[in-house]
Length: 201
Image (cartoon, rainbow, N blue to C red; front, side, top):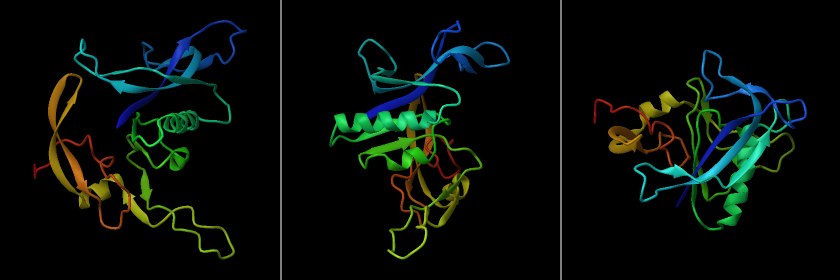
């Protein structure tokens, strides 16, 4: 399995003639306002372990410029690069990880060999997959039955304790091993993979 990380970064640029430069979010900015002027690139790359480092690193292989106000969002750009990467590694399973900024409809059409892990907003409501088309007249259903929020789904899932290593520290976390009733999504690990140990653990 190939693990791929997705994120965006701001390259600080000044000048009126720099294409795509604008004031926008800068996660590395210092001070109360995380903004900076420059060009923003959405980057993807495989996560690898090197023998001379104690932690995994991401090796960027693709990047696309994102401009504020353009029609395509950062999630759209990331999804297009993931599809291209999946085509280059045809038949190989690809697991994509990203932060909470990367979620949306653009991820619905990823290849079957791709899985995506991100952190959903606390208020997000999840639905089952859309049912197949019936062939009747009218607009087809865009989503299935309501499943509930991530907290509601986690309340009915079965968990097991696992050891997770992050930032060179190993700690116990709870990972769901069964999907909640009525959910056809697999795997269920996106529900609470980073949840603290529960009372049962």
